[in-house]
Length: 255
Image (cartoon, rainbow, N blue to C red; front, side, top):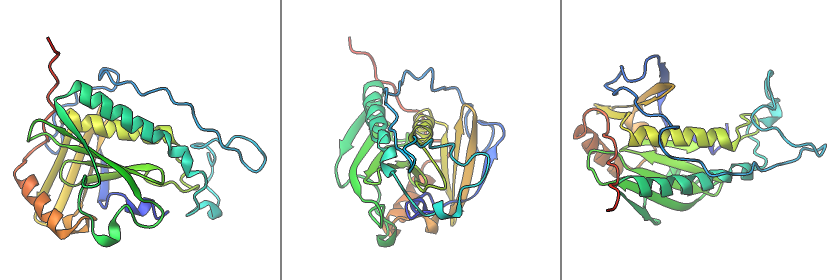
């Protein structure tokens, strides 16, 4: 596991929901990526060569076996994830055109981190932060924090956060397009209202339903990598927001 991976969401006891929309108060999933109107821009896959001058087939190098021991905690060609930044820009543009929302960019955007947990730690620093906020108080806002890895720390609602990629080491062998798939699925689950956060006592739970399934994660709220002040604010927000975050309002066509 790399230092970049360790910055991922600090939740435990993950389990897959066998029937999305029927657990944890999630509504039925009535959206699909194909029907959303969003189209990922055409992006040429970056090509990187190995020591034999052959293209590296990221995503399938170790199948069906296990990665070599020496590939753990080693990151080569992190620039293969650079297309994720183009995907973020396309998502922000699509949301601004399609939904009643505001777009704001600046160093003040995003949550307050504990000093030792900031995404600016170690091997990566934050380059840009973009917030897209729906004009509906009971719908969840999104924040894309673009890092120098390159990668994206994605925030939604009060406490949900996830790295894309979640790990860039050679052993995990991730490639940019599968990371983009995960980021897009998360964005559309949030804007379509199949995203639930709850806080009960010291426990934080998030459940997300997708067209092809869903997931539920839980852990101690104190283990989230944010400042004490921000966690107190998040508790208040979640107590005032029972059930799923609501779908984003569509932008009305101009006359």
